[in-house]
Length: 111
Length: 149
Ligand SMILES: Nc1ncnc2c1ncn2[C@@H]1O[C@H](COP(=O)(O)OP(=O)(O)OP(=O)(O)O)[C@@H](O)[C@H]1O
Ligand SMILES: [Mg+2]
Image: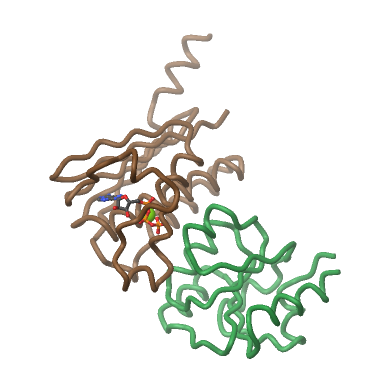
């Protein structure tokens, strides 16, 4: 099932940037911290889980047509990344659990 | 008629020019983001937009990470996009080796940021219809073309 980014907010994901993109649809999940690997393999409309927190993740998400970025384990987003995500409308969500826990939460929501 | 189409296709309809600074990670991706908004305005096929942006981003990042700085030119023709990335820098010693997936000389602090997977040049090759690299000890020039088809 397709879900929207905004629906994640009720499931323990905290929206930390890119509020104006929350109506984007999510069609799948992709987990990786190597940026050009993400560029090569992430499908458009994915929710992307990564521990990277610097501004370049926003450019990667924008160019690879990724719907939202999820940062696990409460890692703190860089200020510059927040600014850019707000500008480009790329939602970034913070999550307390691990990447694995974030992924299974998404799986449960999408099945 | 055939000739006219050819002439029109060879004209540059739009051209963009950017300076790219070495190690400037805060503005990294600016060239590609700009290209994306121009291509979106031109209502080009989403696949062409995505492929052009990925190819452009990887070339931009390589200038930032591996060179002393350079510039990028993007020309939009009637039937294709041409991206030229030119830098001064140490150049690529062995292009064939550099093209291999996983080959990277990126230093540790840059790998920690998620660069250095050694996937940039393979991504550029994969997403463009034509790619040419010229490199010497003084710098590198990469030309890529993406056809509208
Ligand atoms: N413009 C350039 N100037 C000098 N060397 C380059 C340039 N572009 C690429 N290289 C060399 O080619 C190697 C492979 O490049 P490639 O883009 O495939 O991987 P990377 O940049 O190391 O990692 P990634 O792109 O996955 O983040 C680089 O590590 C570097 O040694
Ligand atoms: Mg690269």
